[in-house]
Length: 91
Length: 412
Length: 110
Image 1 (cartoon, each protein chain N blue to C red):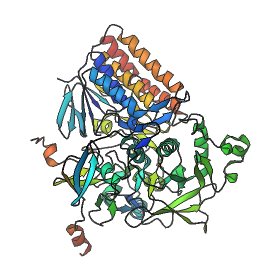
Image 2: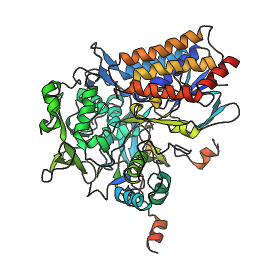
Image 3: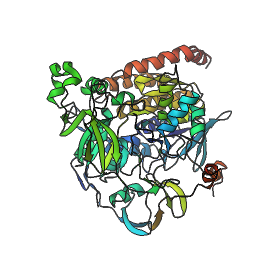
Image 4: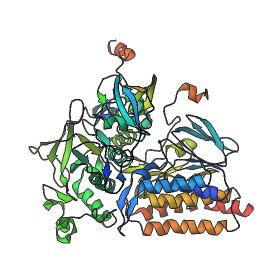
């Protein structure tokens, strides 16, 4: 995978493999930090598609992370909702 | 007042709702899709007996049963949060908050994506998307397609596309990378296919190729795997070819491929473009557990079950009071297992709620036994080690929660 | 039209009512109870939106409501999933459009 710098990982925010890989390599960071730094997984779908791929990039770079080590942490809302919905403003 | 909210109207959720209602509980089922059935809707394969497993018929059957039990089924409802206050669960949805003392989370599975350059082009879809378009909506996904990724789900859906007259030109592997992992390694892929071959859903699918059936060839391994691939019901399975890029301007026009060695490394100078107007990405399934995660349920990573699964007992309880799980959220298996688990969960909920007749304990035992029986007779198995994975999670339950449960029962 | 009319196991496609709707101002026909994504695909329309920033074309990816790639505008409401929304008579459907990201531009030009 040498020519895959421009491969889109996060479809919502169009974050590339190159960006995620370089950031993970530089910062050896957690999944959360990686997302905040690159915006991968922070778009409209909330990482529903790319999350596992972002985790795999970390597993491939950060020492001593095995598959499954990255804890399964989710935060609500797990579906995009309007402020009206969260405020229970149902007309 | 609702007793039980079931999240997901697939095989597990509907079976669970029915068994709750049969035991005297008032049930509401919610689902995001336009009709009940979940991923069962798209399933279509021939059983070893020759009979067809028609997911649409099975879904209708479950739906009818549910209606007989006056179960409230609401489609087009999305859940965005699940949390508990003192004595009840709040299920937050786009139509407002539903509240009940018991919740059964039966959200099923999601597909692993495999990012490939060009995969954002219209016409590229998950293989499950093609299944739904074909069998549920009855709309052709294209005239000429390529599947990227070789696994049991891909073969099951390949068969369904072929049945509907959709032309799938070839199955190739994704390029080996930290993203595709094993899915890009011919030897690993072949081994996993051979492990599952005898369990595949239809006689045609049981690797109907002389190459794969011949033990001599198998032992020789990938080195002698024909470059042109082996035919699976007419579609070449090319384990020595990888997709490098999906090509097209406004939509899919083709796939750039290259030959790969037995370890999945690209052989330079072998690049070749194949025309296509649709591409399916088949990354396999993982348990869709996000709702139990936001509810605060602990997790265990069990590869045999497909990924992170919420801690749960064989009775389908989670460590969180009133929260139950069933179906693919507990591990990737067939729709029939999901139904059997749903039934177990329903009886289990009834028992916790103090409902059901005096023989509720026997019923629960029977339902748990039935899950094993269905598994033993399963025509489709996603992971040959699934029974081991199940054992791991039940052992974990006994270690963490077994004593506590016993005490509770004694007191209760 | 690319509907699978005859299926060897599932049988013939039900004879359903035709529902008129528009996409990007053009008239199309869906079958009763069909989703926007299915109806448009049956009419050879694959591109449901363009990426807000880059303008790259997108269609449905997962078809079951997870990926949010198929979001369209329906009767003026933005970000409706085409794969989970049934076409209703005279529905007005429009693509998700490209929008300039002013903040990002400002940051880049700093």
